[in-house]
Image 1: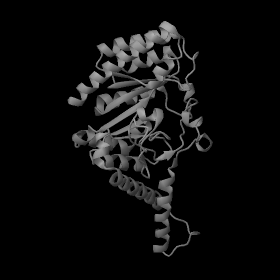
Image 2: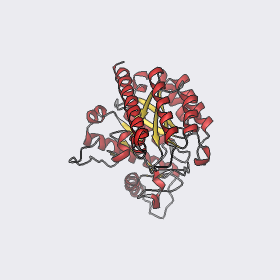
Image 3: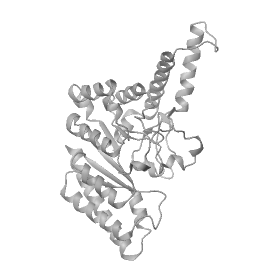
Image 4: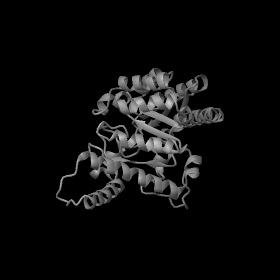
Length: 328
């Protein structure tokens, strides 16, 4: 995590996440702001930017500004005025060029080696990168640009339609057949909470599990399940049962804001002990987020101590398995 005395480094698009977001990655890119998944628990809908967080993804402001500059140049070059209609294809192309230009400048400013050493780039915190309303070509070109620079890329999504489109279907096929050395830098995660009613605009739990299975079995792409937030102990347990054989890692986090009475202490302890047992015996890695510790701290006496002790053990098991995986 970023030291308090250090000033976070920020490019136009590439930046260092702070706070809880820093658990996911040291570097991130938000291509869009807004999301059509409609999750009722989404922190973006409660945070300081909730008043501008829409139900559809909008290109990030730096991209829009750079795109508009390119469009103005296009108008001048073609003796057009601001009142003349510009074809959508031209607008989209200028948006793509603007995005790649900003990322290239950010990489030069921050340093590719620095980002590599820090574990790569995460997409995304203010949108679902694979949102059905988003431009898949922009995302694909950004991901390939980073991957071919040998920069690890991690993508977290709830969407599955992209795996059936020609663009990403061919991209996954080509990466995992002709560019395996590049594909090893790609990790794709699915948020799977098991509560479809809380995610009305997203594909169903079963659809996401099937997409995860396809990534794992067909494409052999590194993947993970984000089991965050835990909406109920029973549902979280069911998600683990359905996914541990088809994913490399399950990342577990409590629901925010943290509340003392959100979970039954006895059930919460039992769940953590069960996860510890699974972590010891399975190839699948289990990562517990800081929110699990914060939730444990709301309990009293033996419940709190038992939670923290078992969370510490899960963390040690994870670190050991992660070290083994890195050495392969």
